[in-house]
Image 1 (cartoon, rainbow, N blue to C red):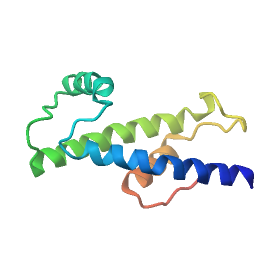
Image 2: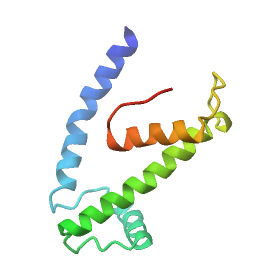
Image 3: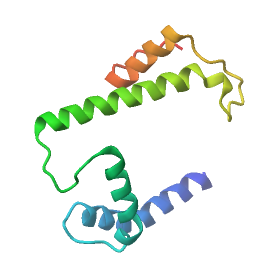
Amino acid sequence: MNEVLLIYAVALLLAWPLGRYLAAIYSPTPTALDRLFGPVEWVLYRAIGVDPLAPMHWKAYGKALLKLHVVLALLVLVILMQQGRLPLNPDGIAGMSWDLALHTTASFITNTNQQHY
């Protein structure tokens, strides 16, 4: 019970400052953390070839969404198949077969919630 109260207290204490920070991020107002995160952001933009100042039309948004889903699907597929070799596996659960991992990955990516463990 104490852990639940602690989580609620931390959430309540962080809600106001995090809300203000998120509001500042989505407005053109610079924030205090821009000095810290700004260079990292620009390195990531250059690495993936994104111009953050250019507007994104619907075709570019669709392409980015599809690329993200392909990358995440491959990542989830590898994680599910290699689960037995990953650390922090106290139950010793073996990795999934490729077909079960593919089915589960497709379910996660499409949000259809049809997993067969």
